[in-house]
Image (tube, rainbow, N blue to C red; front, top):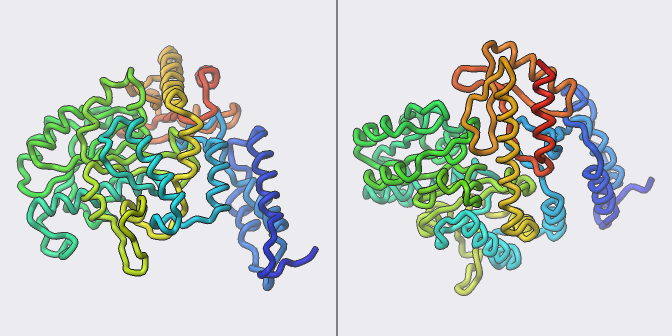
Length: 459
């Protein structure tokens, strides 16, 4: 085989990757990895060759090395975590994004990438019925979206207290207090560390059984703090799927001049359903929102949205400007003003393609179908002796408990071994539980019924 020289542009690997990807997504794929860590190291951790190799041959080696270690999270039987299934149109648009090789830093580095983000931003705010004047940052996922929203919050609440963060950083800054549920998602704590806030800044408020904030505990805690204040609320708790009472929470935030950030990684998409309006009421009164694209909307990974009510606060926290960038008046959107990166891939293209393909009806149908499937699972599980549904299933999450922890682990082992599902036990509120997340694009009512029947037959 001819070795490729570095100055030879060989396009054959593109065709090889496309052919393989179509074949891979056309068939039925294993849900569980088939190789051990040691076996995968034997395949991947080889010596680096001295000279160039044929690219198509390298792709063949990559496929052979990776396939035994892949997890089938694009399959209908994947319920372990809230991941999503990477829709084919999103994947195809992602290929184009990589092939075009655009740097979505500023308008001038890729006008098409910048304007695609403008379009998606408008659609996103419309779909979620959030303030149309809000700004949107395109980031890697919900964790970085929280980082952006909370960075804007940090700058804004310090400014209200008379402290110039841009000039002084956190040196001699008044103490910021961040109030959140003692059952909030760990990514919020990660984002807080990223912006320079630690345990001394966080106040963990006791939670209801569904993981949401107890407002009767939050209100006196807020009253006891006289200084810059941030509140983090949950729209779709990671286990229960529960929502804060955002009408009451936003009113409380207003009385204490607090910035309200919403962790809506997947639950924020419930805003598209009229029948969920009671659950999501008041969400639009927050100051910032974090949401994923790769979960419910099935975008490829590297897709999250940081939404901030005050674009000026957003830009103050994120803007990367330099003389050499030559940002001109009259340019379109400059993405680097709304996210933490300068050089990055053009995330708007895949989002544009997926939203155009789904349309409003498709977005609503996708979210509604998964909520309905979760409810079907819960209704059937509640009829099985020895098992209990521990959450009020209002979204796409079902949490199953049993009198004995061993029952949960036996059930998980049996389901994963003998049925076409991927599930993992978890701990919540001190109990071993089986957590079912219905969010894969391929998952339908019939799959929900099959899962419920598999659970019944596995006891």
